Image (cartoon, rainbow, N blue to C red; front, side, top):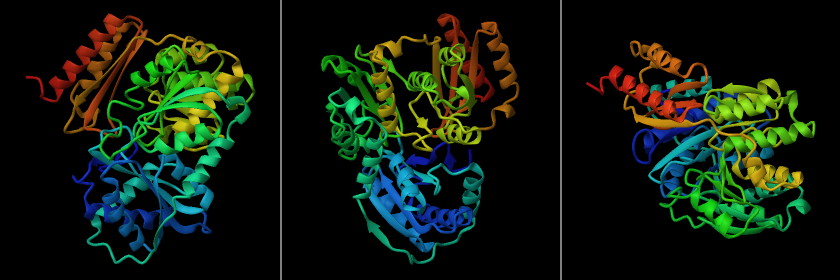
Length: 450
């Protein structure tokens, strides 16, 4: 991770550095200069597709960002409030130079962020992000804008039509579904798509007001959606996050199916159809051990990457694989997209479940999660963990208590000032004990615990 870019773009409390006008203008200007140099296709249109989620701070960030982009000579086309993956799709479809989304994804409403997509609909490589960061710090001022700014909200309908084209309408027609739109970017699109496919939908959290995005709803708060799925006697339920690049599902009994469940079930369905390249799936290091072992036991190899759907995407591309993603619900069906897409993933998974002739609860019961504890500790500074004297060796010693039947992962969050500690193992009590010991060790090594 760089100084400003995290695992998924730049993110902060809106109005606080780096999300201030001067920096945002410089970011727009430098990024477009470097993306023009980075592009291998010289026939691309010198234009940028921009979307935003429903946060109140979006319009002011857009104002500064488009000014900087236009200073590079590029044109800006705003498509309004729309899911992050819509930009990844539209950039490729329109032959645009790049795409940008103003969103802080699953974070609370006071946060916002800026995500970039290349002309191939992929996140920026780290090397390019590092160059952009360095150039911004050397830039004195941004020249006057020369590019044009236009709005074309109709482009979102092209994305909706694409989503509907990826599934069998007759198979899904009439299916009763619950949708939780997180009061975010999917509030219209998800309703249009599922409704347009003839499904019987019950919708919640689809009334964004600029301040209620992700507030006790969406992919991080799925209980209401799960309960509503049971109450409505629905076949399945889906919760999206604020920018709809992730999804968490519910079966008809109200049991949650997270990204691991969706990926594992979809991968095995694809394997049965001969559609899983190399019989291999991509997961991140945070995937549950139960899921990893289940896939391996059923003849699916697992490639583990760092956290972040950009790393999943890179692994899929490098090895020409079909599916991958994160426990959090960022899932990439590479046949259709190069980035996580919550609505697309919900449709694909729903279609696999319907084709199986089984209820969604069948897929929720195929493997058992290892007891797992994840704790986030405030970290105002993020010194490399290997520079904390004795910390990583100490973690290895603590991990030995699980006798090879568990694991400990420590990593800084790429989007928040936090250290994340994940402990998994067969014994829940031992998992908690190990977690507490690792936390204490970290606090000792950073001087927070005297």
